Image 1 (cartoon, one colour):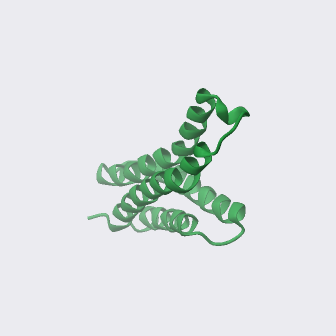
Image 2: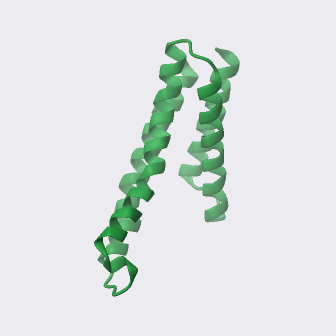
Image 3: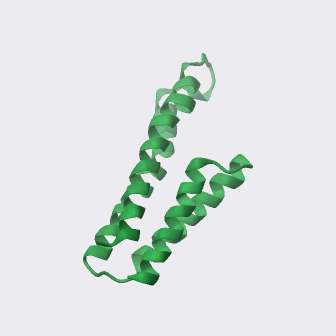
Length: 122
């Protein structure tokens, strides 16, 4: 069993789910409930912002599962390398943007390290 790739897939699903669910409850929901006459008053704008907010979640979950499937099929290291770079950049950007360690950013960095460990040890 490819333990590191399995860890990446599980963390990817956890981070994606948490980002989407918590983001809806803590950020998007309250933001859209505020009265506005500005740009957020337009439904299409709110829909685009919501979609853009959830795209990273889909990418993290999809890449995490892809790393596992790639390992199970003895694929090349190109996909895991790309995934690890995306996970690392996402984690670093998260920590820099928030100016402090955040569970999501730390988990994304853990995904990057686990992906590199999968490449190295499998």
